[in-house]
Amino acid sequence: MASQQQQDVCRDKESLKPNTLQGVNSKQGGDRKNHDIAMRALEASETSTPELDEATNNLLTGFASSETTLSYASVMGFKQDTKLVGDDYPWAGSIFYFEQGSRTSVWFSFNGLASIFGSLTAYGVFKGVRLHGSSIAAWKIFFLVTGLLTVAVGCLFAFIVPDSQLNARWLSKNDRRLAIERVRANQQGIGNKYFKLYQFKEALLDPLTWAFVLFSVSSNIPNGGLTNFFNQIIVSFGYTAEESLLYGAPGGAIEVIGLLFCGFLGDKTKNRIFVGCFSLVLPILGMLMIVALPLTNRGGRLAGFYMTAANPSAFVALLSLISSNVAGYTKKTTVAALYLIAYCVGNIVGAQTFRPQDAPEYRPAEITIICCWSLCMVDLLCIRRCYKLRNQAKAALREELGYSKVAFSEWMDLTDMENSEFRYSL
Image (cartoon, rainbow, N blue to C red; front, side, top):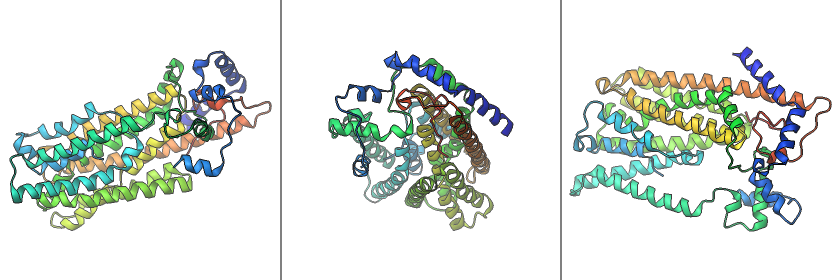
């Protein structure tokens, strides 16, 4: 593995030779479509390059998922009312991932809050229908509540959230330029809407792209199973369907705490990958508890289940690396698209690992989850090693005699492998 990485780094180093880079930028200088839109905005400005002080920088930095909803509904009569038998329910969980849109790291950070909200709402609806009756099934009411809320929030996002700093209505013209200046150091600009074939090819030939894909598939096989079946897993511990709805809330709280803690620790130590790798230890131990503890120890098995709720931290850590470590607009969108496709595939497969004939313990699925999380840890360590070698190669190149930084390279829509000034986050 190390030998292959060294070869990759040597190839990368050749592509970063100053003459090659300057040739690329010289060609781009005559073709404005190759410039980042931030550079065009700054060039159009009548004033000099803005200076960003700390106070202004601080000022500028100034709910529910369908598969989780399905899990709540599964113990509220959904399967009986819709006559789902055999493999029908796993496919109901998988089908979500054939239709979904893009996801962002911000969305993931609110998954835990959505789980808490969903658990309490589902419990209230289920208990209310049981005590007072209703002409509409409890799971249908729950679907209506979460569905209408999702539509309402989506409409707000469509009208309020801008697609870049240049479209932020609440910022003045000068503040928009300051917001652009603020991201200069990341060497990525804010976007270029032109498709570039060479960047697309580079994304497909970059070994790290496929390391990302492997991680996305491996981490989301457990996710697809747990998000669709967690209520039924809790019921299998010996709790009632009503109790399982309420007992899902602590798992959401653990997810929120895990995401916030790992996010803070990763930024603080500047070791996001190590922290993401470490964050998988707790979920693996939790699943081992579920597998190893006797069926009579329902409290211990429930505690193990809560420990598995910390697993999204690693996925979000790697998702953030696509933002910070993949440069070039076409390359970044290609890698992000492949990552999302792998995310969907993993969730589709994950829902199918919980087979009806394995109920109530679902032992094969639990073992599969442990193996997938272990593979994710190995994959993360390999990704970090490769990034470290590439950083060393770039640092050595910048020290070579005759090297000079190309002016405005940060606004040239270069890929991370083209730009010798680019540094990978670890």
